[in-house]
Image (cartoon, helix red, strand yellow):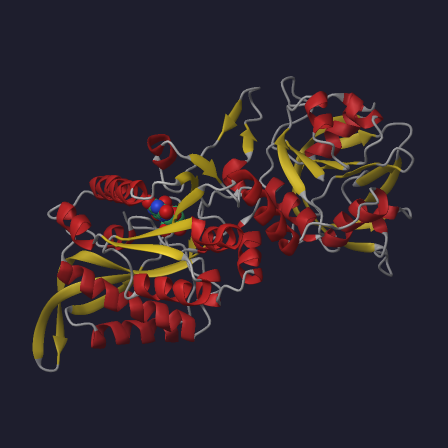
Length: 511
Ligand code: XMP
């Protein structure tokens, strides 16, 4: 495996994914991991990520220089390059002009790093993002490439298998970036690809069988890609000893509950417990308008319903959850030595309360890998590519009070949005698209009659990780079609507006 030491770059996860795309398993660890701890991980190669700090600052993060004497190939990227350079006797200085974005790289020397890359004029585009500049390199290193503004854009020591790049090979804007990473893995570290989703499935099935023995396992199924992949994967290992609880909270999209459940039952023979709790949820939400109150009521009620159902299953000792790798990675603040550990529970608070052991089969995977596992398991497109849907469901898309009538209006409008995004091929291109019902009425005219009816807002956004998002520039014809259909087909709506706010400062959901 390849160990990536994280110095806080926004691209660190991208490095890990690029390595995995080459069929090599990679893990991200905080940069302050001791050399001893690193050795215990038995890496076959190490990559030092970029980061926001400056190696010229006093308290900047560093590593044990012995890492370079241990015979393991190391690739430093950006901050990683500056650090390697400084620790091995080179010189780094703050530069007056920050270099950011496109730059033209010129190759100066043949190197295993440039294997299968040698364009006619020896030049290609790379992506830079740095403030400091390498002034001198260690004596035993060679310059492999430069750009117009910097003399040392890539350096290396062939014998010691130490390489460093000032640019970012992991971003798509760098030409041959994929090839450079592959060259480091295969031409320099001499690794053999072994990480694939089918081998992942085999291993999980084996591990789960070992771990669980004759016990039974319970999981919450929401119909989203993560929980569905967990369910189908564990079903492969445990068969009927896996119990999937699907709670219908009355806040799902039109027919969504039935669709998912019947599909999974038909094709995978899951041991499925479909709990109809619509009335309970809707009763408790009566008269509630405050968004946080809605979320709390739904969260607590979910746990209550789930626990009650799970407690009926006497042999269950384990709870399975769809935690993903980005939730597990320890992130390090470059300013201080203390590691900030993010912990995340998809079904908040369940394991602590229920006295069950936790099983998280996806905790090594990135989202795109979960989708690949899903495809490998034979799940259909409508599950694999389903947009994220919040736990509190339509409750946080009905601004104001939730009533059966308002739920019905939103469901119909939302169905049209989903159908039109799918029909126009925009569904797969956007992060999320949905309708929101506003708590106001406006005047309209239909036929010769005055109308006074509800407003639907359309929210469609692009995003990579939901942390930031921008509204999707949908073609106006598509917007017109969605608007026309909603106003004509959904009784009680006479106006549609399009949300053109980005996140931040807005959020994706309205509540
Ligand atoms: P916001 O509205 O915070 O949403 O920009 C970011 C992403 O998270 C989803 N979301 C939720 N998902 N439970 C969930 O499982 C929730 O309570 C929840 N609230 C928001 C939202 O749909 C978007 O993808």
